[in-house]
Length: 325
Image (tube, rainbow, N blue to C red; front, side):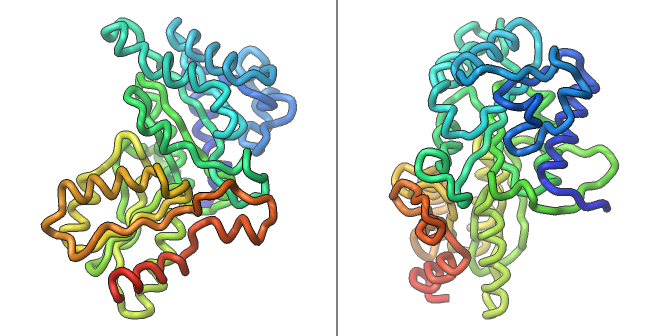
């Protein structure tokens, strides 16, 4: 199979959507003439023209509000918000309108829009540009939240999203755009709400998503060198959440570690831990352990910022401390 990077996989999925459905258009800051802040939409303006690739003013509430209105009118807008930090300026449009209009209209209206946005730290963009709010949005009924970590999943989830009539938050980690992986040439989809077991094992379950799925896998591989057989699960989707895969794994391994880049206090890792405690308590040999980003604003200094983000070594140290393995 050919290998591509996540940036190319997302661009391929967006081109397919534009080519195959004339209701699809894109809007966002710098997505056209500038080719996108993260170069995902490079060449799109020239290929599709200004009617379908719309550069917008710097006004996130207007961008998302316009997309909600367009979706209600029968179009399929794809919004790009430059970073998830900027979605705070549009949170009323996202949470009170996009997420609720289908329910409040008893299904008479749907809002089939996708909001692509960039999440996570690690790029020395300081405290207001390095946050991970996908867990916040996953708490809102009516929204679906996707967190791809590989090119295969990015393309497959994007394709599957086109068939969904609900608003979707598609969270792309800023440090994963160059991640390379195999993507088959034949058509495929990745179902929404279905986790994947990256590494089967029997001694401990390590759960991650987005960039932390890679950290979880690295920790699992390093544990194998010590003779510990870790099962690694990549959630891929926060809402819907695939609790079935998590519970089946914990029933086998009897231990669970959740790795998340967001802050521990109020983090989505707590939701995962709670689901495991509620549904697999009798199978646990100890408490569900969480390894999160530190509860501080992201420092600008690269060394300090790196110290706030979970690493494979932190996962290993936590497993040894809590489980003695």
